[in-house]
Amino acid sequence: MLGRARRPVATLCLVVLAFDVVSCHHTVQRDAAAGLKLKPDSQPVEHLVGVTLNDGRVILFDKQVVTTLERDTLFSFVSLKPVAVPMADVQRLWLESIDPARTTLAVIGTAAAVFAVALGIAIATKESCPFVYSWDGTRYVFDAEPYGGAVTRGLERDDYGDLDHLRADSAGMYRLLVTNEVNETQYTNSMRLMVVDHRPGARFAMDEFGRVHSVTSALPPTSARDQSGHDLTPWLRATDDLIWETLPAVDPAGRVRDEIVLTFPKPRHATSARIVARAGTGMWGSHMIRELLAMRGSAVRDWYASIDSSRPAQDSLRAWNIQEELYVLKLDVDESGTWRPRALLPGGGPFITETRVVPLDVSHADGDSLRLRIRPPMGFWALNSFAVSYDDERPVAIDTIAPLTARTSDGRDMLAALSADDDQYYPMPTKSDRALVTFRAPAPRPGMERTIFLHTRGYYQLHLDESGAPDVAMLNRVATVPDAAARLAAERYAARRMATAH
Image 1 (cartoon, rainbow, N blue to C red):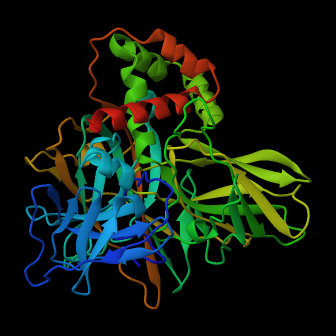
Image 2 (spheres, rainbow, N blue to C red):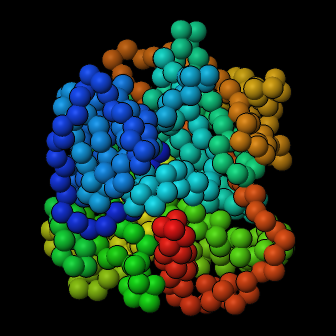
């Protein structure tokens, strides 16, 4: 299985939006030596690493084979034996993308239904943040996607992500490649590394405020069930390639949220805990950022100005986001049979979902188990794993490393712009913008392992058509009617499917 117990190599977490059918795959008679010959109705899907099926199985395809999509079936090879996988059985596709000119690697997990609607539509819906590639000793690997959702300067924020693949080069330098690969202008204010050396086997993760927490003894859920009683425990108990994500609602007038209850063991007298979650924004949820902003048309700049200059406007937007749970998720605790909201889980991604630690008050949770409820709007969330930790926190020594050099591909020096939180930014207005940022690696400590986090601050603005009149009626509906944004997402997804079917 890809990336068991850690993030898949350079995982770009796109969603597989697939229908709920019986999962299967079967072998077909093809000549492995001859490879896959394209038929008139087939399309090559190069560098397809493998697929996750609806029943949780993972199929890894042979390398150096061009997989094809013929009508609604993928054809490839496993251990030199030909296989056919119906797209209706696929929950997620893992595609490897390599740029030889930059020696960069990305493994993209993409939604099957979106992929089936139109090849590449999943990539087209990505609407957020720079990509950060780590030098792993051989090549640059996609490793971070900071400050998602910060769509104007008034929403500028700090982001903390783990760099799983970063390794020092032969000169003792850490190297990061920062790129803009989407239709937006990105403004990065600062970058620094946070280096933690620790005993072998220990695990650490960040909360949204940049505090490091030990999660070595985090416990997985003993149970995870949705509103229909389906067992989601296999999907949510470990950081792996099983990522639970549901389609936008099929019927926009019906239910537009899932409801999932997770049960964890709990010491009877515990009063505080830490939820350790790997979850993030779904691909269609990311696309809806563009849809919601585009509805403002010629008034979008006025909205930006309001958010940039007004704390009440920022607070109102935050309150709306918490109510709708599109990009932040409420964690409800069962307290003697009553659900009480006790914490918020921030979103991120959509291509990379970071592990995030959320402190949780459990002082009113009775007994020896902790029951946690989440109600994610359908199509907006990708859920990978949940765990709980009750360990006493111990101080962690952190080396904070400022960049040593920062230079763009056309030779501009961006070191001053990236060295401090101030009014200087590294702007990336085009999809050809990229910069190489280097850091001096601290000397390794004998007998210790190292975990590295990236602390980034910034924001971005989407490139929109600002010529139309704002859709005032829809904007008012979304702002005032509970779950109207999730219903709009369902309507827009249904319309996209209809358009691409013809």
